[in-house]
Image (cartoon, rainbow, N blue to C red; front, top):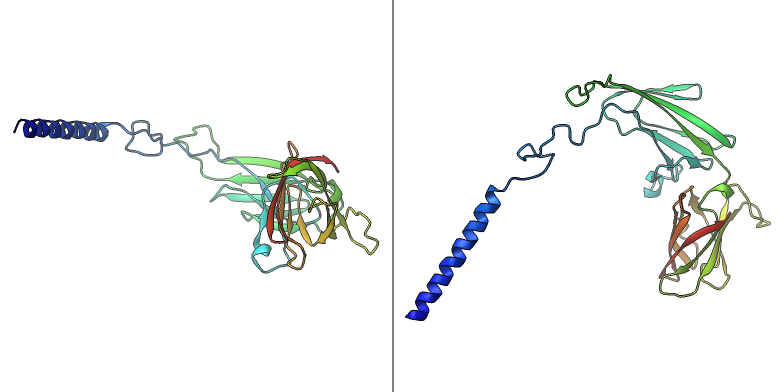
Length: 262
């Protein structure tokens, strides 16, 4: 009987402790500036004044109708002679784009630079929208931005050149070279053509393939390339670090390193 009483007391104490903790959780204030029910609610949280922002991206394969044809390579300011999408994240505004002698009034648009001379170009965006005076009393609802970008030869892209690093799970460093050629002499070229990879197998081998190439990324899309498959090269244009992720004879390989030369 004594043991039963002790057990009952313990159960009651545990129950009271749980109830107290539950009440404490229910009564505790919440902290979330996006939630009107919380003590730190901020009606201006996550909002912005009217700002002109420009996002440039490269249409990976404009002539294709499959998923690859719908792919855009993320924002950059350096392009080969490709099709470029001009866009802005601001919704519901009046847009005025000026590109060369052309004026465009849609939120986004695309233009090709397939035969454009190499050099520096600029695009201007003017946006107008009813401002949020409660959050930004001095906002007049108008903003203008000019953004420059470059069209350069293939061999000047960050994704082309010589890369030093090593494969995952291997201790020794190696060098992989990425070049293009566009005639029967197989001479390195600065124009669009076939991509040549040297040393993907680590035996100073040479593999050629059709690829989509941009400044920060290179994608192998040729299903007929043997033994190479699903290659994706991504480089950070700032610190030159690179990751080459691909399959060789159906075995996945990942090469990490840095660009050391064009």
